[in-house]
Amino acid sequence: MALSLNPRLVKALYRRAQSRRALGKDAEAVADLKRILDIEPHNSTALKDLRIWTGDSDLRAGSVNSIFKLVDIEKAASADLHRVQISEVGTDHGPKPSGDADQKRPQNADFVSEPSPGVSGGGHRDIPQATPSAVTPMRISPTFPKCPPTNWFQMDRDLRELVPSGQTLTPIAVEYLCSIEPANYSTVIGQNLDSLCLGRLLSAISLSPTLSSVQKAERLAALAKLPRFDVAWLLAEDADREKVENLLREVSPENSDLLKRSFI
Image (cartoon, rainbow, N blue to C red; front, side):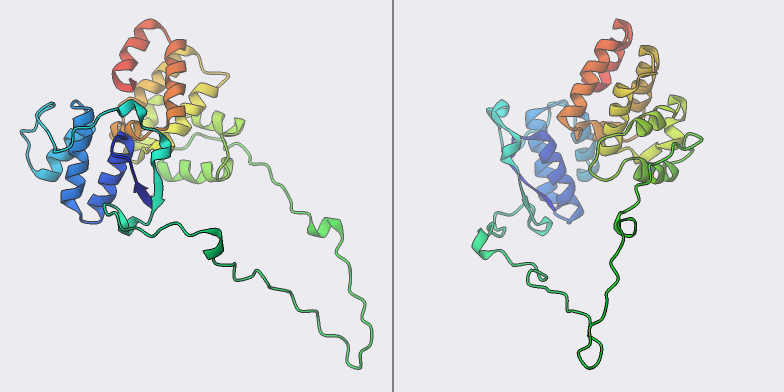
């Protein structure tokens, strides 16, 4: 799935540009990047991608103009987005949402399990009843890994166990992510940083009861040095941006001023 969007939203425009690029719609993808630069002329990520996609290395901030000049950006909201099939990104001919009457019924809506065949001759057969212990699923609490991860695949595997899909970070997951030393971020995370990973790390840093303000500042600085940080931060959720604002209030003014260059 991809986003059919109001073009005033920078994050959504960047996502659509990436989707269009992946679909081979280079002209439309470039147009989206130019729209972003209409809104934010100094957006380094959009400018960098535009140079690569167009092959024009002479592009500079403020020199790019598209045929679109956007207004009332502040009025844009998340409600301006709706889901469409990715094959329809960049077109206005997507399928209309169907009403309740048109929705397909689940294939198993009328499914009724057949009774077990009886004993020949119609005799009664006793069916053993399952005991509660036989049907109650076992709940196994995740255990904390003994050592911090040494590579991306190990961290990804451990987090699948520590953070069930759709759930917030558990205290064990917070401790696990904070156990990674900032000096090892480039080795463990490397080129794999995305908005989800960034959001989890920011949550862990902000929720940690053991990290000092200096240690939190060190981790934020290390994140900002990762190769894919600019893209991950551009696509970060508003809640993650609020976490950073709160963290910047915790650290010293000197560290806060340095970190604002990357996070604000």
